[in-house]
Image (tube, rainbow, N blue to C red; front, side, top):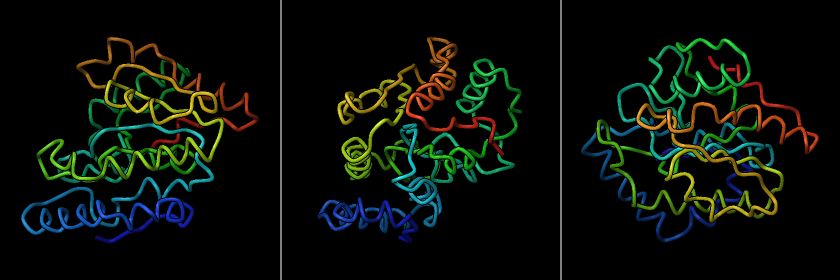
Length: 225
């Protein structure tokens, strides 16, 4: 497994890489990749941590699982590479941004790297998946690893905005110190639940207002390629 990760995160997560559970996770991944196609590519597994250094995180968006169809997963939750058809959940996210901010982001753009570069950590709870099988790499250790990342942000940083969409993400509230950080919750943006409160949540303007309250520049949510 090729590990490409920003040094700031490597320093924070080194104990996880050295823990017994992570050795078992590596064995599982080697076995999976010997039999099946898995996503994202090895160099992109830690893309969220490589794209947004620990000390530059301002906002955290939590996803559950990488996309499991060819060409989609790029190691940033909800994001797809430039030129790839935009999945329905991301279409709904763009719809809400446009409604919230009065922007006109094309729904043919899906690469969120521009958010990551501004301090938005786009973190899936599980960092890999078997092709065509959603959730296939859950409960093999990734959740322990990413929970440790969330806990480290909660403990060592302050004033972060956590966007938790859907029951799976909202359950991570227990890892976050609400006396130090802001949490915004909403239903998941998937077509099955977006109409139950994701549309109209206005999380993007609220996030920028919260950042401003800490003297931080806003996120330019239109930076989608």
